[in-house]
Image (tube, rainbow, N blue to C red):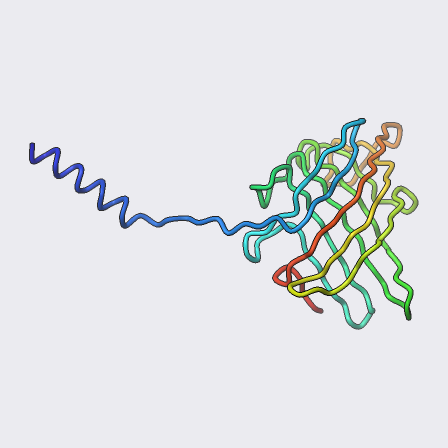
Length: 182
């Protein structure tokens, strides 16, 4: 009987002293797109300063660079498979805001294969909102991309004979923790 009591006490002590993990993950926006006739959403997530999404301000060039990495579920931060990645730069000249270097990547099977639109003219991009708000940067807009299939997204080699239309929108408040100045 004392052996059973010892095992139960040891288990209780181990559980008491074991580290607990608390997820402080947040969803700060979404990417919504129609792929192969089906509309779906991807989640922009962060766990503190850990996120695949980011923003960078380059004061010398009066430019901002953003990467919005849509996760397939609201409870993932660094998933690659079935993720949607929208990257773009914004240059301000006077009161004019110009989007540059827009690219869209649908990582259907992670970096192994998917769809890529990273050449000029492949994506029509509209930024309807970009403003500093308490706690980050609010951004909203839309995109329409003619993406090419790639069986090696890491190399950016594509097959232009295989195309897929990806139309969508985004809305996010990128947290200050994910913004950097250069």
